Length: 319
Image (cartoon, rainbow, N blue to C red; front, side):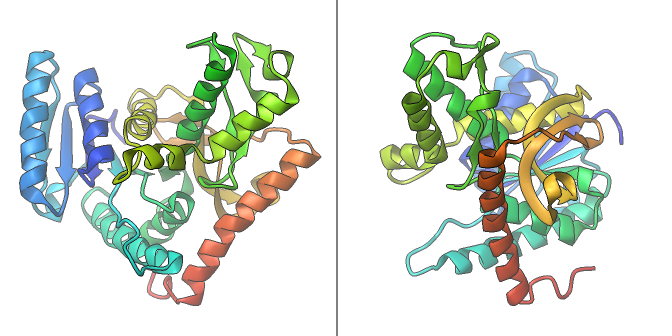
């Protein structure tokens, strides 16, 4: 692929539009293309962001794809499109509805941006990343899910809040799926290189772990009518820029496992090196018995979602 001058964003809601704004302010790419079923709203946001870019003297242009074919020749496509859980809708109903949305979006990407790397943000994140891989037929390195960076940033903030110091020096680590069964790793979390276990008690660390697992729900409880978007958007732009700049830095991301950690044909969050080719290398981290048990539970949670899709014959017409 090229050096990444065009980024597509499917879904111009709070997360998608904030991703676009951050990229535009950073001048991370030459063009950002928004795609949303609410075309006029997307146009208004694109115009507003383009004017903000002009104020910042950024070279980035923000435009709107009114038709699927206008989302073409992208180096990276971020997918945030999906339905919220509506009254009377079961979890399986939501899974199947968002899987269908992901299918349609990914098929358009495959047709009009066949060389793109796809970053999935839609929920349930790990299952949608799996759907994107199956529907696209792309190599697994070209399909990544955003969650680990977000969950790690939440854990880092909760550590700072507990300590009262260390802002900007905290490196937290979270693996596994994006949900209640995620796997925060205090053993791999540090403050200016100092192990977390040397700074906090086991009880304090357990409190941070539990709060991290429910970090998204805590924000929803305050917002009432929506969910987090600043931190998810910033976490997504970190991934986009790592691809565009070919940094090869290591971040936790949801990727398809093919034998790593002893699992296959499933998606889970693990440390990966991100570069111009997407997930260029999957890092195998040593886990102790307790961490392996938690990771297994997390993987099984994602596999249940995949099983539900299979039981509903969702993948029968994958090409």
